[in-house]
Every structure is written in structure tokens, then in C-alpha cells.
Length: 181
Image 1 (cartoon, rainbow, N blue to C red):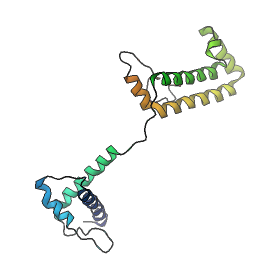
Image 2 (cartoon, helix red, strand yellow):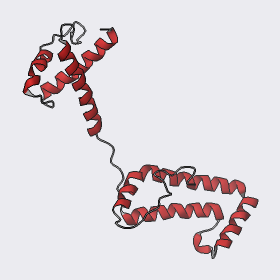
Image 3 (cartoon, rainbow, N blue to C red):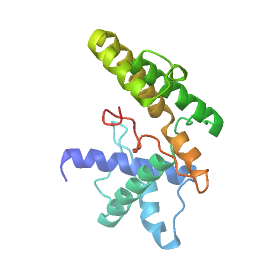
Image 4 (cartoon, rainbow, N blue to C red):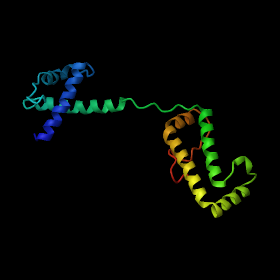
């Protein structure tokens, strides 16, 4: 067995031993012999387990068990809580962001616009005479909307799931990216 694999095996076996001693790993009766073999392993001068005399079966079982323990620990690791937005709060927040985008594109609030033709003329006016401001304002508003989606994507998805029988459009995708802009 090469040195890297020996060190990796010793670390994995140590993880299994710790789980056995802590009682977080329960084993079947037929697995007790290899588990006893692990628990009886001596430690070398460096503090690492001396696995040189370990049976092939015990080594294989310990390595497989360690991989399973790692997988389970990753699955159950605490994740930071996702912000919990209520339906009205999420709608209000989204419409604030949409209004900021509208303002960035047209230079005015949506309540000041009477028709789609007026939107078009305001947008063209802004492109022709205030293109730098339009770009800065739009990039800021789009960035804030993207950040909102990144921070609240799971909460928005859960909220949308709770609305039975209603189609919800959040930009057509899970994330707000450049194509949604």
C-alpha cells in the first residue's frame, strides 16, 4: 500500500473509530469482528493509527463506512437559513425591483406613463441623449434584482409552490441572469 493511501486509510479508519466510540455509528452483529479489529488498533509514534496488520476485509469495510459517514455528514450539515419571505413581501420586493428597472430604462416611474408607445419613445429618448446614465442606472437596478434572486431563490421557489393553481413567472428561469435582463 503506498504512503498516500495508507495515510488516507488511517484517517478514514480514525473517523469510523470515533463514530463507533461516540455511538453515532451502529453496526450489525455480523460486522462486529471487523469493528473490534478497528477498535483494537494501536497508534504509532506520530499518533496515527498503525493499520499495517489490519485485515483486508476490515480495511475495506472501514474505508467504505468512512465514505458513507462523510456523505451523511455533508447531507445533514447545517445550512444557513434561507430568508423566509411571505407571499405579499416577496411580491412587493419583486415589484420594487421591477419598478427600479422601469425607471432606469425610461427615466420615469410607471405611473407617469400612459401607453406602450410612450414607453418606447421615453426609452429611445434616453438611449439617444442619456445613454451613459441609462447604462449606469440599468446595470445598478439589474444587479440589485439579480442579488435579490440569488439571496431569495429558494424562498421564492417555496412561495411559488404554495400558490396552488396559479402560474408564477420569475423571469423564466431559476436564476436572474443576463438573458433575463
